[in-house]
Image 1: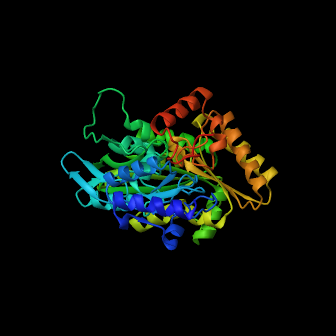
Image 2 (image 1 turned 135 degrees about the vertical axis):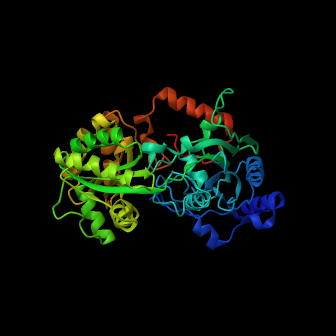
Image 3 (image 1 turned 120 degrees about the vertical axis):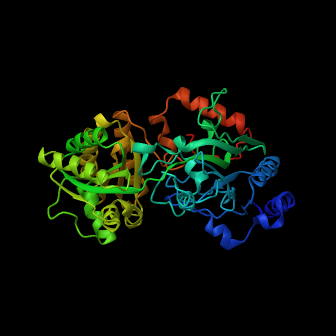
Length: 463
């Protein structure tokens, strides 16, 4: 963007929003040049920092008038490159929209602005005896608007669902500057097309989420945690089925293959949990009462599985500290991502009955084709979400080859190429592997209908 246009635009935005809401400051622009993905950094000419939802809409109205492209940013923790600016785009950051507006402590709903950080919300509601169950490693940085825009999943989808299940209402700023308010606060609402669903998981293609009404759960009094060592994926799938039947409080079932455990131990400096290495490990969590009953129920279910030979060994945490130690390997993903750069990080959905076949085929293909790289498998088994971390790749062509190999295998298994991180720019060309031409065409029509000038998050998601 040439300087005179940039200055002209800055003036127009300053008039509409106030001079302190828009900046060309180099240090600020640098801080908004990339998300956590490996998409190439790009320093934007301007950063817009609205403080109210209404100001987001007003900024869009100005940008639409100037046909100026814009990328919306939340906490920048995305791994698909959706929030990394592209050449000629200005940035609109939602970070200052960080107010918790209303809290119904009787009904368990809360109205928040899009820039509220996940961990901030979790702490706020827990003080009043409520619980927001969405949880992921980026909890200290990711924002609720971004969680909704990507339909974030995380560690407890098995019991509480994805972000979509937590949202009762939304407010959205449309690319033409219209405010679309859908701030429903009731669980049951059958009044025509549920428009909010268009914006959840669509990665800011159609509008920017500015406010959310979220549904809370009663705060569990305690968590029970165990780490199981297993001889095969089949044994893990069987264990999951058994535990689902026996433990109504089952909230997490995280699967880690042996190579992942080994690598996590190295980067996070962890002692091996068991004296022997096993092919697969399952991290199990139940949430419920503080009494001994929940702990006893978990111990009884795992004791029976041990006796039946379906698990080989188990550690049941006896304290909060020990539970944290058991979670430490699974929580080391951030360090692993950093240690494996430049990497291919996959977040795919695979039907449960195809998972074992898909993993063993992928594992063998990756080791044969890319023997110099590390290929680590882990995932949220309860919801069929498999993560693969492969790298480092210093060659762009090899990176592309590994992506095609993994996405084609997932497509053949009847899965989807993104379970929770979204498409962004990183997976854009592979979207037709999981969506039909008719689906893609309808997405294009929706985009054109709501954003006729294609100024908002252009070039993301759609091939």
